[in-house]
Amino acid sequence: MSIRFLHKILKNPTVLASGILGNSKDILERVHENGCGLMTLKSIGPEPRDGHKNPTVIDLGCGMINAVGLPSPGYLNMENEWEALENRNFPIIASVYGSSIDEYRKVAEYVSSKKPDFIEINISCPNSEKHGMIFGINRESSRDVVSAVKKVISVPLIVKLTPQAPDIADIARTCEDAGADAICAINTLGPGMVIDIESKRPVLSFKKGGLSGPMIKPVAVRCVFDIYKAVSIPIIGLGGITTGEDAVEMVMAGASLVGIGTAVRYRGIEVFQKVAGEMDDWLADHALSLTDIKGAAHNE
Ligand SMILES: Cc1cc2nc3c(=O)[nH]c(=O)nc-3n(C[C@H](O)[C@H](O)[C@H](O)COP(=O)(O)O)c2cc1C
Image 1 (cartoon, rainbow, N blue to C red):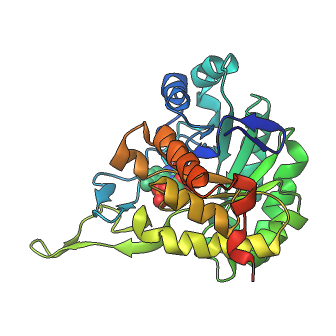
Image 2 (tube, rainbow, N blue to C red):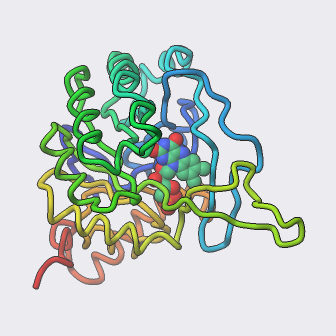
């Protein structure tokens, strides 16, 4: 089921979500061998950052809550990883975050020089210049960060949106107008909280965290549905995809590719070939192609 995404031909529409399996070439290669079409690196930030104290991830059965706190070695301390990735035979998306426009620009420009196939900016982060307001919930800050990054990189730009935006379709359209080549939706949903009733304390050390996995799928599908109506650039739909049928649903909402994060925990690293195979089976059973079902839920 090979598929074209912007300038690249991928072996199938599955994408490893950012932050799930790190940045090492060996792991990304294994993910690719296990059927993944396109691998996203963990978000890379401006400074070395430890992230939050444990516990940072809790499995709730219907998905997970996490507050890992964007741990990053800092963009200047990844030479070994970049060197290993130079001679790769698989496509990657490098994910970038910052807390100011300047940080995004600086990190993205440097990362672009390492020639990933795509750069994704994670705009679910608080903007230090705007009193901690999240970049991706505001039209103006989304536009400014996208146009600043677009000017300094030489690979296609994907913008990853947060479901916290009151009108995610409006943010997606703004990003397209500012130069985004594709949209990725959604990041984790929340923030949420889980309290241990015996100790009477929030379970996560950071107290609040983002939700992922099956419980957020209906929100992700609705976001992709709304974004598809608003933009003409391709969408990577993610949030709760665990099976081929989930992926088919996301494509019907309007996604070109389907991201998988939390399901790696539930179905192992083989989840990519399983989901791609199940999509193929569903399409064959219904005598349909991926193109036939893309955005099909929009038909009257
Ligand atoms: C433990 C964990 C770490 C994550 N780290 C990142 C990250 O570094 N950058 C990012 O853009 N998204 C990050 N995410 C969000 C995922 O990429 C994805 O958007 C989200 O989990 C929804 O997809 P899923 O339901 O398939 O997991 C993380 C999610 C989890 C569960």
